Image 1: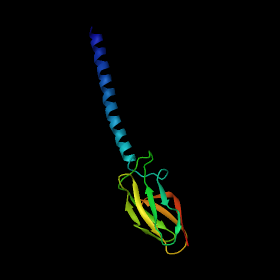
Image 2: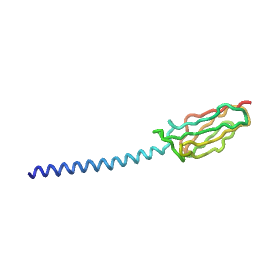
Image 3: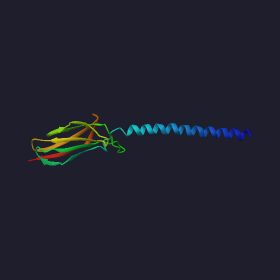
Image 4: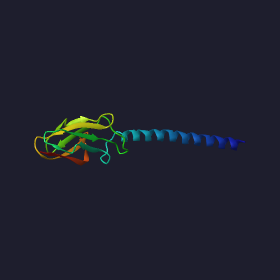
Length: 135
């Protein structure tokens, strides 16, 4: 009888220990996932331009889409754009609740403007975009 009680107590503590380990380990996994959801990722963030060909003096809309590696959008990230031709307004903007920042480019001279983006002053968006200004 004592052996059965000892075995039952041993099984109880093993199950209790396993359950406790699972609960604490699962909580730390959630924290890691939450941290990753707010870190911008180069492979999933990108730039858009519309239209990409336009006359001199006309405005084109530029958007930067900032996402984490699991493709979750990141609101509140600061995106700064630079161009080889023309003027971008605003140069730096925060992403909205959809993870998108809005910018406008104009140029008084014809040529090809290459636009590059940087997120939170720490990560470059890897693929630049181009806007052609023509007469």
